Image (cartoon, rainbow, N blue to C red):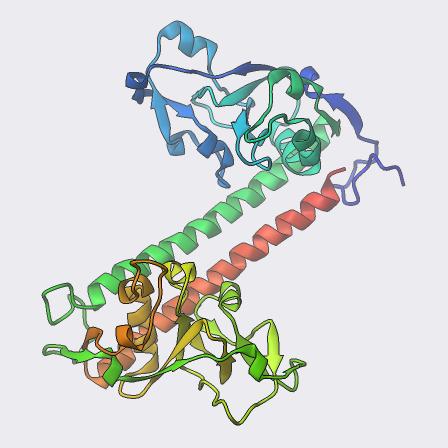
Length: 405
């Protein structure tokens, strides 16, 4: 098979794709540099952030605006079918990144970007995908700079892509536009669920100076009781890996390190290494709440609920629930934020002296159970939507590899 045809094609297309320079497809020019008092009003202006945003470039979502003279505006219109490129960045992966503009209402563009004014017939979405994925390395190689990477109109003119027939371009461009729309909707759904959770955390826990929440389940009334966290849990710290013998997943126990928390959302059931049981060191029981006890990870609020009995290393702490419902404990710690419990005067750290006196308001156990279950189900729903979003993103990545040359 010729190297100039993709692995997967729409039915009815068989001819080879032909090489073409961007100079044959568009004319390039730099954007607007206006006085600072001109910004924040006037016509929408596409910025680098708009180009790098994963979502579809809609006029209404463009972040910036600028007010310029009619002559400057006429000269710097971004219209349907044009492409916009990142002109300069500290990150090589960003410089030259492009976005097709497919809106009816024209926008303007900033001086940190380059416009490719469309000439001739081609699918702008097809060219965007070809540049950002198949030809990405070509652009990065040609971008100059040491501390900042830059791309110029001259360089963009020399970038070569493989071009399908106009009809095949249209098919491919439309297909990926629809896939991008699906991904954007799924991303929006995840964000909506996250915002809903944030709002309910505020409503279902008492605000500062109050003893009851604004929203409660039916059948519950009366003030929540102030307690010390140390009276409700058993505090455990981890152990050095040198105390254990590593083994296969099948025969061993989970041995958690802070990095393992990056691969989960709420519940933690796996780790990169597994160890044999050591009777000198008790396992942290499942349904305990674990988190980093020192370092920058505290500031990212990596709180997890154990799904299985586990060991953990010295950089982690576990709270075993005793006089508190485990799901409520998890929700309280996550809502509060580890950084509020920690000593952050130097290197962030959490020790027993920070946990034991920490005050919280506590409802009766039946209400704890209701609240804990509510937020667990909400977290599970968010996780399902997040997984679906990641699946769509992986599908797009796989299709780009087999539908482009």
